[in-house]
Length: 144
Image (cartoon, rainbow, N blue to C red):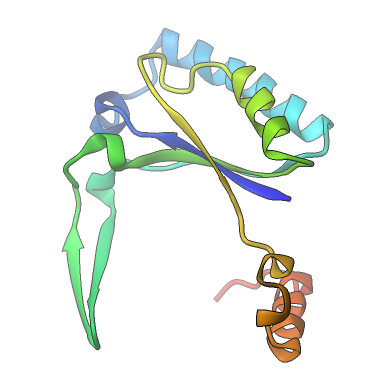
């Protein structure tokens, strides 16, 4: 199973605080943690995100789209970074997160969310759609 491991934003991550000696130490610890994830064969992706002030949201209402520039309120609802892991179980993900260095250096939160797989839909996923999904995953990523 795959899981998305979501690092929630804090006031510091949203402020875009530049690296200081403490941040540099934390980044080194996180680098070692990411190496352990890679050596265990579970790390598919790991990325930090810019503050929401550099992002946009697109709101949908029927056929209408409205673009809203950041920053966004409710820091606790924002994402500062993520990992994508291939793991055996949710319990395995919890154990790995428990070993994680504190990604923000302050009070924070990490959320673990299983990613839908084709088999989660069972017979409801038509064979043509299942094949399309398998082809998409098998194709190498291309840049525009």
